Structures are given as C-alpha cells and as structure tokens.
Length: 440
Image (tube, rainbow, N blue to C red; front, side, top):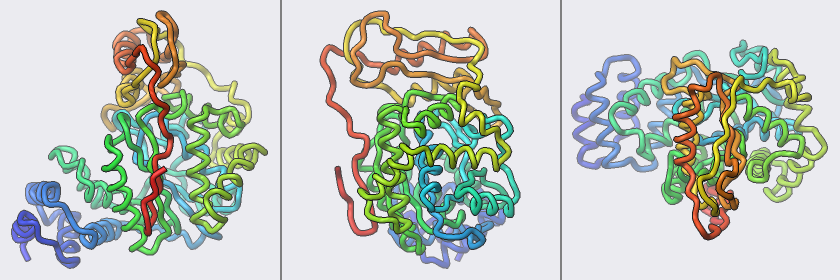
C-alpha cells in the first residue's frame, strides 16, 4: 500500500493495521518516505487520533527501529522512571540512589534539557569528572557494583523517534497524546528495564497543562507498557509550581544531595519518596505504603546518599561534591529579585521561571548552546507564602551582570501576588495502573 493511501485512510479516521504501521515507520526511517508525506500523516493523526492497538503498534515499531538494549547482563529486577519534564525536577538524583540502596537495580538512560525544562544528564555533568558516555560493559559493571548508573542515550536507539520528533516540532503536531505516548514509551521500551514508573506532570510548567490531559496521557503510556510485557504505573504530579527551590544544573545537584541528607524542601522530598515507593512496588518489594516507609528509612539513615556517592565515583566524578557540597563554587555574579507589594503569592508561572533560568545560561534555547553549570535561580518565596514589599523572593546567579535585567523581569512576571491566601495545592493528584485510575 502506498503512503498516499495510508494518509487517505487516516484522514477519514480509519485504523491503520500493524503491517501498515511497520512499513510506514521502516520506510520513513530509511528515507524512502519523504518528510512532506509523513507531515501529512502526523497532522491526520493529530486530528483523527489513534486507537490503543494503533498506538501500541506505532510504539513497538518505533522502539524496534534501532538498537534494543538487553539488560540481562545486570542481575536482578531493573526498574526505570520517566518524567514528562518540568522545572526544578531533580527527582532522578534522589530516587535512583534510594531505590538502588534497597536492592533494586536502576540502569537509567536520560536526556539533556531543551527549552525551559532541565535534563538529568546536564545536571550530572556539572559534577567535576562525571562521565555520562561510557561503554555498555562498564555501564553494566557499575550497575551490578553500585546498584545504579545513569548515562546519556547513545548508539542508534529509536532513530524513528528522532526523525518524527524533529518533524513534529516544525509542523505543530507535538501536542498529540498518541504521538507523545509513542515517543516516550518507545525510548523506555528500547532501554530494556523490567518496570517503568511514569511521572506525568501537570500544571503551568508541564507539557500537559490540564490534569485530564495528563491522566489521558498516563493511561495511554501505562497501556503501552503493559501490552509490551512490562510492569508499569504512573503518578500524576504537580508542576504548577517549580519543584524544590533550586533551578539550574549544579544548584539542583546540591539540592538533591541536601534532600538525601534529610534537609531537602518538603515538596521535593515528598514527591521523591512516593516515586521511589512505586519503583520498589513494581520490583515486588511490597505495597506502595510499605515501600514509602522503606524509602524514607533509606533517606534517613544515609543509604541513598552513600549510593549516590558510589555511583558518582564509579562514573569518574568526584564524590567529595556529594559528601561535602560546600565544595561547589557559586556563580560569579548574583542578583536579588524583590516583591513589589505586600500579599500572598497566589500563582507562579513555572514555565516563565524555567525561561528565566535559560536566560541566565542554565538551559538551552537550541541544542548546540553551551551551558553555564553554576547559573540558575534560588527561589526564596513560593506559592502560598506571604511577602512584604521589598522582600527577596528569589536570587539569580550568572556569569555576568548583563544577564540579570531581562531574567529578573521575566521571573518577576511569573509571580502573582494577591490579598488572600490561596488554597494549598496537592503534590500528587493520582495514580494510574493497568486496572484503574485512583484520584487522591
């Protein structure tokens, strides 16, 4: 069947057969199907959607378009976590070591940041000497030795997704649940873990601004993972407010370390403990509530911190930056951002906070941009706090004073101050499993 016929079929809302999807993905990956025809297909999918069988087929064909990682060389059950992205989201640096310290292997492949969201690999590379590109054999060795390793995606993993995402990005078809779900899950399935916990963010700093959309995306991804033979669940978590107080690579690593020492922000700690609990749950360690207490104990007794230090050392980094975080150097310049009136902080535009950090050099506007690892923002006041005119609500850090004017205006515009205290926000809105959606 010609690509023209497949476009015509989907344009009328008909379902594509698995063999049709296979030929389409293989042909596009090989360069046999031109961009303009695939762009037409993406737009047809955007408007007509896909049923569960189509989405699962698309995901599996994308995952099989390149290298599939075989983790059988790593002992025990391997559990992965994926976040749909946010601002201040350094959860991997906390939950990975916690879970590994409790005997569950975490062989994780992570990405870099782009736009207003940060990337785990960028954060780890702010640790002097830390290597995120290591041979597969050494990767397996480190996971068997320390329980965890985190590396960048390498080789020829999911080339279909790379080509499709580049096309979606320029054809206004990024925000399609079937296409988002297949993009995320194709990478997770190719990475080879037995269990997958999905952290689906919702709010002003998330890709899915609306909770119902977040739940719909979570259901699709859990369904895909389950049909592919993986243990899978999702938590719907808040990203209407930045997670923690630090935004920026080295600053977020320091905050993750403080969290593993039991001194982290309450919101970050709570979200990390529940994500860790569900990773342990998928590994068969017990019910989520019991696993929460296991993770809490590993945080309190320092097991998670020791595991992070061991991973950092095994991957070439200096563990002193984990054990003695005062070694981190601050940025050369800083700037206080102050409240302009009295009142309660009733809203924070989280995406704007992320954009302000990019302006300071902490993130990339383009893939080729370089990073200033020491740049970023420390939030002194957050949602629900009362402030007075002139109170410091945040401190910006950067390599030059010339960076602060626009960044401070952007950050200040993110804050809404009102006369009445706002309602307290939930951190976790619900859980999605293969059997049910539970709202908290």
